[in-house]
Amino acid sequence: MSHHTSRRAAATALAGALALAAPGAVAAPAPESRAGPSGTAITQAVSAEDVTTHLEVLQAIAYANAGTRASGTPGYRASVDYVVGRLRAAGYAPQIQAFDFPYFAEAVPTTVMVPGARGTPRTLSPEEAAVMVFSGSGTVTAPVQAVDTTGERIAGTSGCEAEDFAAFIAGSVALLQRGTCSFGQKAANAQAAGASAVLIFNTGLPGEEAVVPGTLGEPGLVSIPAVGLSYAAGTALLGGGEVTVTAQTVSESRTTYNVLAETGTGSPENTVMVGAHLDSVPEGPGINDNGTGSAGILAIAEALAGEQTANRVRFAWWGAEESGLLGSTHYVAGLKAGDPAALEDVALYLN
Picture: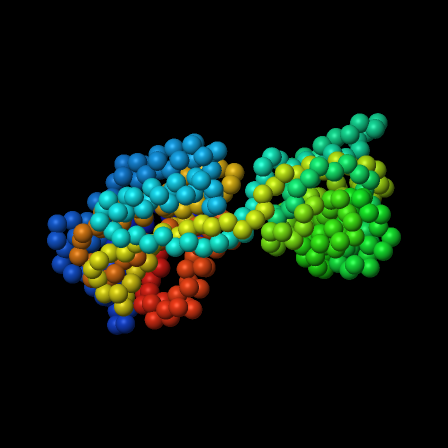
């Protein structure tokens, strides 16, 4: 959904939407009363101080919750509670829309220790190894065994078939190469063959030499550690040797929330939606991305509270957008399945 629209630009865009007139589109605004919803009134009614106040609260929420406001965490729920509280105080009747989503996080950074120079083990850097999303957990020290790969620079079929593991020694760490089938299928086949962990290195083709930032697709597919490697880190292990893989992850289904609120006036057949994602990435508080958008539209909503608008204005704070645009997708899918007419009534979406 969006990331860095400024507060003033957002207010100006909303003003333009409210003022836009076209047959079957968005009606012209009614004469403004008091601050009114005209372009000048909206942009003047929303100050930098208003937005900064909201941003400072979102930052404080992150500080109190391990530095993050990611969906599925207490920091996100506290962010939802703050937005809902401000909306209710402004006179709105906000709706909290719950939905489940696949959650993944590292409890501690994943490490891969490999044989180094003169027999001294070394830990691969983040540029060489990265845990795969929905990896399992565990600490494993075991020999590496390559499966159906010689390290040739190709997108081969390494690990895509159960037959690839015919000679695999259970308990070993499976070394696979990216290509043909999904990472999830490779990891699941490795686990079924008795692998204690799985390492998947890049193809080595142009543009595919860096560490593999992969996903297994869903929680619970495997319980063993699964880590992506760069092409160089992977091919360095083709000769075998003992490695230690340590992963502590949380991979499960969790509940998160969208927040929606709309004005009590204006034509519902020409609804103007204004949205921003409320969640951060797991690694930080998300003040720039997208606390700014969330704070900006909250300030606009507060400025519009109680005003007469020619068109219905609906505000949305999306959850789990950083997990793949899941909140907005859930909302639209719900309208398509349950109330297609309401979806048709949305004349414009401002992100």
